[in-house]
Image (tube, rainbow, N blue to C red):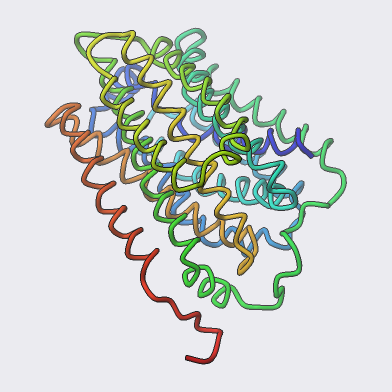
Length: 383
């Protein structure tokens, strides 16, 4: 189960950020501009935003192994398609199609997590860190080393191997959604409950702000470092994201931190760490590496907080809550990638920082409103 869970989260995220380190190749192969690169990075996130709300209902009674196997085979086909794509607009469509598939894999993986959230949440987030890192690192290395076609064909082979591994590991269907939570209620009823739970609403808003920030920063870094005065190639840009891996230490130690601090204290500390890291990312290579490492530690630790909030809810099945969360999460990422590229092209890094600050301030006001408003659950009676 643990190995299958790790493959599910690593393999899903491996497909998510494949173009972030490839701006030099995109410019050479397609004539892509900085703003267009933002749209291409946004394509998979946009696909996820659209399909994420329905994945909970679709996968709730499905065999996790079946969904994961067919999902990875579809991703293998899409990676092979990218290998032979010579048109930028077709590339956008294929990346969008990848985004349509990925939520099914993530929600099925979260259904595995929901069986034992205390044990499996750190493993799931660990998988997202490793998958996200190699999503940027591997394409940057492989495309530089063996070319665009062979680089993406090798990614297709990795997806096919993931499908085979999942099929061999999950021969027992013990991964259905958590508990017998009113199985016969309609998706609309579950949606009403999901949006009436203030804890889940906070998780949705936090997820939006989290991936908006992360997507904006990592998209702009790939663009920034390919220009003067750096002129990094794709392999070097991809290697930079290895600085995200120290975040694994903090994620795997999440239980230890929760033992000695409340979630509010942890969250405030992580937000502070994120802003310190953005300040550190400056004009020299070493400060960028340190800043990326601290930024990744803060954002991925914050992801463990939001994931735990989702699994703490007992009003709706984990798959349904996750589907809605992923829609908010990747909507934030899609807007962050495209908007940050546009802002960076006009105002540079300083403009991106202001954009992130304004978005986070707005989301924080919404969180305060949701947290402290008087609530009346619609399915309960009485005054």
